[in-house]
Amino acid sequence: MAGNSCYSAIWARESTMPSWPGSTPSGPQAIKQSIFYTAYKSEVEIRYEIPSLPGSMLEHIEDRLTFPSPPAAKCVFDETIAWYYFLADIAARHLINRIVDAKVEISACPSEVQARSLLRSYEVFGSQLQDWYLSLPPEISFPPPDATICPETNIYKRILRSRYLLIKELLCRPFVRLSLNYEVELHNALVDEIVSIASLGLHYCAWRLKAVDRMSKLDHGLWIWIRNSTSCSMILIGAARSIQFRSGTARLVLPED
Image 1 (tube, rainbow, N blue to C red):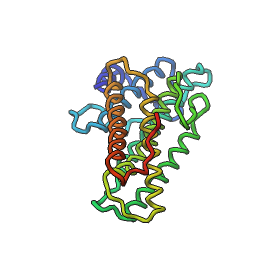
Image 2 (image 1 turned 30 degrees about the vertical axis):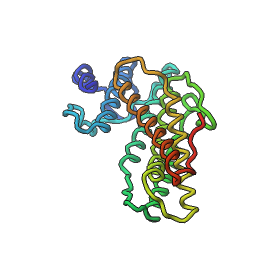
Image 3 (image 1 turned 90 degrees about the horizontal axis):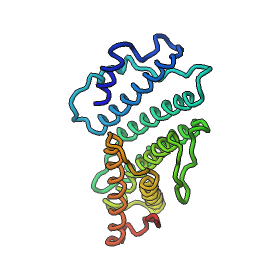
């Protein structure tokens, strides 16, 4: 794994972490920190998705980790932006993990209590996502999609926008599943709210597919891209077929394009 290689090449010789809080890394040290966090973040992300992978020497080092050190006052502008990007990406990944862990079990006949529990989770995590979005500096912020989504040339903005779209779609996914896989017998106002969020989730699936550039490198990012693209595509196909053959999901709104 990338983390093992990075650990062996860099951290085994000298720590990439600052020796005391508030210390500012030198240029080479800052580069080593960036390399380490890139490799470690990638490994954690893959291991969270595939927990059956063999062990790694980085599995039990959390107690030695801190956030990347702030850039020096006189550092170049790009290093400062990269630091903010790392913090934003780490925070987004933590939010994704919390959403994945906060599962609400749905019975064969969904109850109002279960539906309202889903709605509460949607509101709480949605509020956290909005706080995350509003905290982004202008240099790495991006306009959220509205009717359509435009290409993004800035790499930091493009990656963080991808995180944002993923979180939005994950928040809507339980409602898509509820609308497609269950016979929902609840009062009309609650059903309307569920269907509205589910329809929004279908739009975020389409936006996620449009927002990602074609992958040309054979790395872990390609695996994640294939997995995400397949998930979004299958959700849209399933919704379209369900609307075609079942009257119960006719109120779902598919993306026009």
